[in-house]
Image 1 (tube, rainbow, N blue to C red):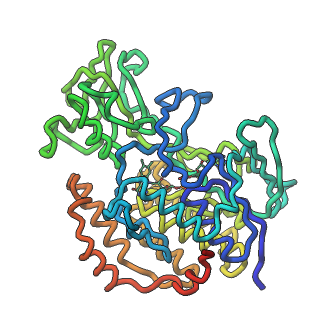
Image 2: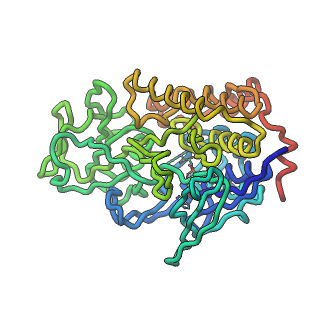
Length: 453
Ligand code: FAD
């Protein structure tokens, strides 16, 4: 017989919405706690900048979203669809394969409406503490504070699903080298607080990091800045101006900075800069979670987590959706949610605690053997498809390969620095690849029947 639990989902971004839909589908009772006043998480553009633009001050006024105004998706719609719910084009919307960010927020709102998820959300409710009740496995106390009030409310749940995102808390590695950055006189800001290029008009900007944020923001800021210099970890990179832009240069990492505003790169070349913009990523952050040390965040590893979802000792009552990165976030979160919901209902069995622990330790051991630092634990590229197919197998669905093909194409374009890939995307071709190689994953009729309006 199927088990129905009372579940608290924390966060109403993509992860929380997927989790809530699947939990409901499995017959669980769901409450979503969301500190904002609407759904969408990262996809709600907020023009405000935090009071500390580097995000160091723990008492700063925080802003959740890291979106900047001009952001277009870096994945095509097919890779931002849920398994049985496509990110389809809409009349009068942005029809492009890689649309503007507002289109994503619209899609998430439509998804939430279609599945009756909004009524499950307690808005303006920030969860401030989650802990087990007297060490009981399936009793979790959730405490939350409603905006504008000092008092804390509390309720007990059988399961807690953490869906709070991990791209709001700036990571500032010691990338500025051997001399103290404090004495550098210019403006410093993390990409989390980058919104628009205008404040950087006619400036010389140094960007640290050339991951997705550094890649995109360098182009955006170059529309106003005089010069943009990107410090990268690309091995043996020679100073070079990008062919596509006459005001963007690539450099080695920074060696040191000087009190007169000079920024010196590792090959000895230098520039006098007005701003250093850190595109150095984000930290996992769960300040509300109290597990007596069972789950920790150490050097950006949330662990131990079996398959990045379940802490073996607390499974299945505590789980995390959306921890992996360097892959297709939306379908992965959808799939993880299906797994969690079905494990909680007893439809799908987890391995024993010991087996899950061994599997997790094995991953950590392999990382150590390869010399990979802890902070890359949840970076699942290039094993994303393997991971995806493994979870598909757990919930009785066949493996698939088209997602991997599309994702690889994106990665290849990024490596080739083909910034125009979005507008060169051959939609018809990729649609045919998908048609040829995929099996319908979830029974679509069943999914439609579930749609409430
Ligand atoms: P979030 O969207 O961050 O949602 C978390 C939610 O939890 C928020 O609503 C927050 O308010 C709430 N919350 C947090 N703490 C609490 C608390 N204590 N109590 C109550 N509520 C809480 N992915 C793509 O697929 N395509 C893209 O093009 C793409 N572009 C991106 C661009 C940028 C700049 C960034 C930073 C990320 C991008 N991503 C992209 C990844 C993106 O983050 C994910 O797609 C996805 O939105 C993450 O969803 P999430 O639900 O895990 O987290």
